[in-house]
Image 1 (cartoon, rainbow, N blue to C red):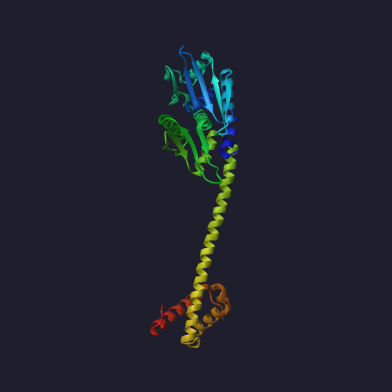
Image 2 (cartoon, rainbow, N blue to C red; image 1 turned 45 degrees about the horizontal axis):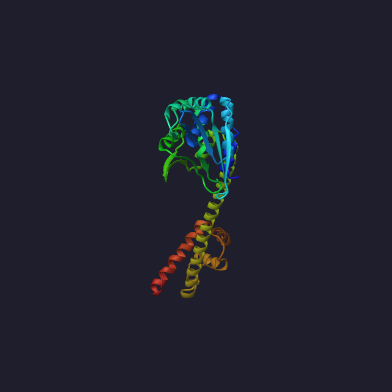
Length: 319
């Protein structure tokens, strides 16, 4: 199962003890993957359609626990697409009315078949209900990327008002959620790892949160190691390039004016570099008598380089 599927499985097993939170969660699910059907006799039915078994199970149990209503579940298999979809239906008119009145949707649909566009703000006044609503919204229309590959959390809405409502609820928890239009849908999304950790905490998906944190720690450790390796490699390349240039300058001076013409200190460090081409500045300094520090060795090598450039110019050499 994917990471997103694991999160939904965990959320499907989370139960709010308060009835108002159960109603808020169900309201979100109805708002995103539910529909209201009104027949010719003005009788209501409520239907929730999902391709996730855990979500269908959660809806069925929510309706049972919150309203003591038995709903029907139908399963449809699409052999061509190799997919399965589930429909949870409250068929009895009075039962449907009870559900719709509780989630404050009854007055928004007068006839025919429509999709829910927005949930009444009364349903999500309390902080705990906001958490439940976001949880229900993710169950109904949310997904997450595998954190080992990328950080991305989204909830897809059919209508812009619903997307804006979800964004505002997420913002009430200091989430910097954004909305983007994707074809005919509106997507509320988060892309920062820390924010996705926070939204999992808000939805109370604590097991998934710990799994994500473990992935983040491993990725951060890996990134830190890579940065150190890259830094050390860059420093090593810089050191090697400097040593090669020093050898070229010293060899040039030896072959042109002779190292014996140099001062005692410059001759000593030049001979040390020629005999120890791979030595570091610290190691070269330890070979001198008396020993010289890194800055002193670097100063002498720089003087040798300047002298080599001067001799090249005097003799018409190529820089």
